[in-house]
Length: 365
Image 1 (cartoon, helix red, strand yellow):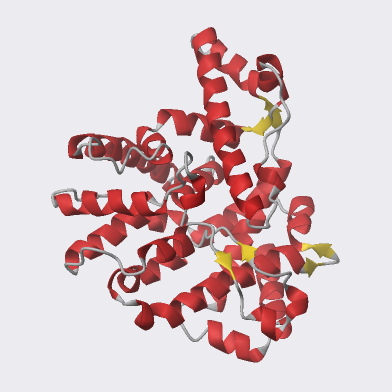
Image 2 (cartoon, rainbow, N blue to C red; image 1 turned 180 degrees about the vertical axis):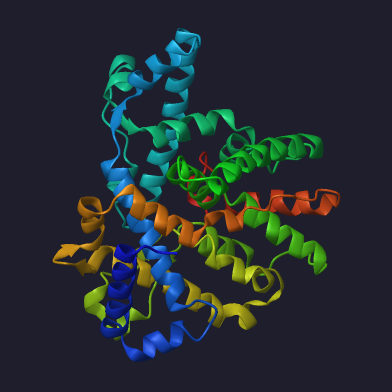
């Protein structure tokens, strides 16, 4: 349940959508599975995450390493692990930036800081506590690293290894779920961890797709690459708003698809419907991403752009209100069943078809 402050913001978002977007466009989008409430809830989550990212205390990587050292971790080895992991992440972010730039987009947030030596890398990168956790997660959570390195879809990535890595993943998020259910002390971190990992790697969503494939005896998802990118990746969207209201858009836009909860409505259709049967609903979902982008970048609230208003006026109490209303843990499949080996084969193929190939990034779908 949203608190009163967040209810007021939600009402303002609703008014903007209803009053600014053409009636025919609204009727089109909201005639499918996506609702106005879905979009409002997603906008609120994005604004709260933005506020957290821009107000949380940031320190150098060296600061966190010293804390680890005080916990009796091996200073030199841990320092090099973190350094290699940070380089590993930044290399892939740079490749992603160059791919988007080649398509006419420039997302500066993907660029690494200009650091010329190890000391500057350790002391100069300003990151918050959650970002430090994410750096460690890429190194420590084995299934995430296997996804990033595209090993998960290889033939030598065995069923037993897959199950072992998946068990480790599930145990970690079960612990976060317990925290989430038992109070607000770590609620912001718990939500952001689940939201970030599920948005970036979609392990639970792919499990649901694979389970549906087994249930419906489907061997291949129709139009697979395009569907996975639209629901899990960064689709390039040629919106119909370009014709209806060209002043709102500058052209084709790249948009991270992070509707973790709403996309669950589409599992059966993604798996079973042929392109001509699913195209209309598919396009409505993609247009909903455009609406979210427009609200985040164009809407003002109390004379401030809405994300900046959140930075200046929202608190952790407000974020928790929004996060609990959204409850990303509804996307977490707690008791996964791996008895049918086809599920694992399907998941591996989904990652093969959808993950960045950082050696050949131009082949990303």
